[in-house]
Amino acid sequence: MFFYKLRCSVFAMRFINFRRSYSVASEGREILVERLAGNQSGITVLGLNRPEAKNAFSRDLVDTFSDILVDLKKDNSSRVVVLRSLTPGVFCAGADLKERKGMSDKEVSEFVTQLRQLLINIEQLPMPVIAALDGAALGGGFEMALACDMRTAAENAKMGLVETKLAIIPGAGGTQRLPRILSPALAKELIFTARVFTGADAQRMGIVNHVVSQNKSGDAAYLKAVSLAEEILPNGPIGVRMAKLAVDKGIQVDLTTGYSIEEVCYAQVIPTKDRLEGLEAFAEKRKPVYKGE
Image (cartoon, rainbow, N blue to C red; front, side, top):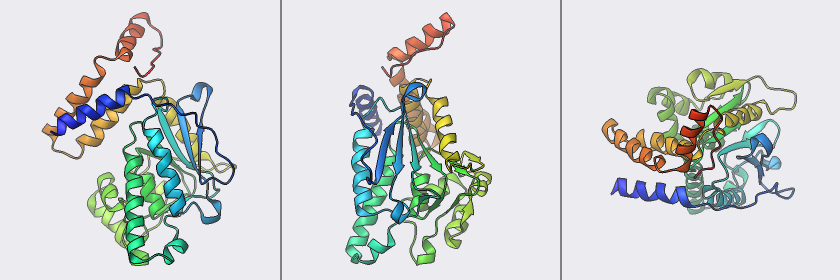
């Protein structure tokens, strides 16, 4: 049954080609969506844009973000997604505690469930997602970064799962993702102590892929994320998506089952036009032109 569902989901992903013409949204919207052009065509940038609350997760922000992801998941023209902040000095401060203070216990539980699902939806986007941390990523904001496939960070950016300082726990997947990135013992230390650390520290621990010195415009991590996305763009988009699926599903099971998942994912690329284009380009000693078909 598992492999049947996997085959069906892969089949659907290959042939759905939902295109929506995103543009930079009107001023004041909490998530701005931008499609890069030219040599960067295929990179979709999601910009957190709630400066008055340090991009904290409000009900409206979560609703808006969720709607965007529904369309993005079906969009084959987006080959790589970069998640950044448009608010200087901060990536995301986590939950909006001012809004949460007025919630009932039931409302808090419902909101955390909704936020957890939002981050799962980010994690399950079919294309690679890169988080660019040019500023503080704390609590739920750091959990969102952990839900991405890769992370770039400014060396002085502050981050951490700080929930135990508020007598709660990370509730949007942080207790599950961080131990899978680090060792369980180190993840426990960071969660139990609510320690805040820098981007440079995060790279030494293996949490972020790349750390960069911050520039005058405050977007060094974003520029590095776009550079990383540009390295991915020339490669076959179906192959990249299948590789992501194979890794994400494979690390959750035993090795033998993982091999079977890889086999299923490989089977999806064999009949594609892109695979044949890759072989022809190699024989003709030219760069391949992949169309995601």
